[in-house]
Length: 52
Image (cartoon, rainbow, N blue to C red; front, top):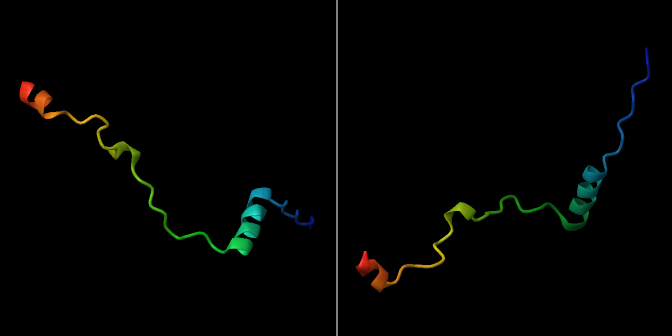
């Protein structure tokens, strides 16, 4: 039977593991504001509303 090939070290996983050990686990949930729901930049003035 052939020898089992050892897994190579994945750098990104190792970096995350070390970061978790140093700083602890990241927060479980982070709310990101929905960029599609931005308020209107230039609100219409009363004069513009009356003109319509």
